Image (cartoon, rainbow, N blue to C red; front, side):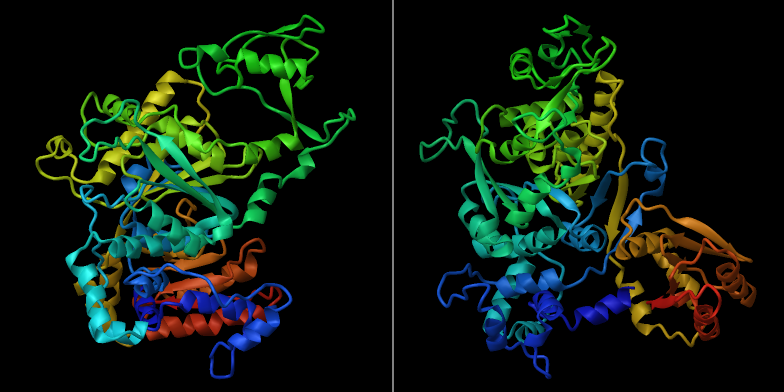
Length: 625
């Protein structure tokens, strides 16, 4: 596990990931000694793309270092919050809250969620000089190591390490901080996914260039403008009131994003030969109670038959004026019975207009609303500076998701702060939507109101905000159908003394193993493994009894963590494979520190024999250290 990651990281170079992708798709462009042949590549692609010898690029101190950091795997482990996660409101939740460094979190998430995230929203530090941003990482490279890995001279290596160790808020430091996070975020996005990034004038220009580098210029969607201030600020030094922020939006791939909006065409047909083309029956029920949105609560009458339909408890999706337009355009599907529920004809052309018809200006939600919302949740106490308004984030998420998808949709925020994005996703009341929040355990100052109230880190405020918002939503809307719980996990660094034990471990020496399992914790080992193996953080783990030994199964993996696996347990495992026709995980994973040579050798000799039996099960034995 950790030892193997450490060994692999030692060989990583800044462009390791890119070279891996090239080897996957352009194997013929590599020579026998592993060098990439650019001339072969040009010849292979000459009829498909124009290879330019001119152009411009974004350069900053530490650019290759940022690429290196993006390529290095994390050595942190995932510790589940067992008490919290077992509570009735949380045990079946698909929402996730991660306490820890977002760089580590992204590397863990990629193992299970790569290519599966539909919408990412982040509000990173703006590097204003007063927002507390300084770059400081935990990677411990020597100048000599950086010289070799990055092919740079000693002076540049020392300048980079100076930025990373002493902390810096320069433009280069900010770009070096953001670059690996955006590279990993891109890998999380589905092919039709989008990312929204809040920023102000301090780094907007640099962020645009960085995103062009990471996502590609052709995948730039828009630079939205958010008018965040209702009244001009007269306190500025230069006399200019900064009333707006930017919201940069990029997609993974333009053609796939458009195709994703129109993906499930099987739902569309034209049974009545409507000249407007294919359509589907769409729900018109709203998501707000009468006290929340009284303008959406009214009876609806079919002008042709006079049948009156009662308003649903959560109102309609459209106001009276818009509904009247739908009726006059013959877009309402009327039930023959007053007890039925009118629905709307939704045309393929509507999807296209929904995709292209967004305004580039947000001007109806102001930043003061975000502060008011948070203080109301915390009984009038002001614990967090400049939280984004819930309605603003709701608008962003609504633009980023596919309204017609019937699949689960993941919304990720890896600078989650006070947890506004989680509350916005919950308020959308959509069973398809699940959030993944990540927040570093940043300490509050002792003189802060949050610290005085007993909160030590920002992630504690974020989790408490979600709990309080969920209770409020449920109280205001008893018929709420969405997910109001969340599963909580903390990313832990492996202590130095444990790392020393890992490095010194000798599988031929017994009596050392159980100590290491206790150091990690069985639940932490299993959680980290199932995420690494692609099952996700909320996947269920089942116990498998093998004589006097307990194994754990998740999907196609069987995990053996404890020491003391007897010959009887190994026999029981082999018999279970042979006798139970509907059971047979293809991967058996061993916590190497818990197995001496004899037990490991017995498993290696007996399990492969199952491939020769009647069931012919090919079993892969994976020993992790």
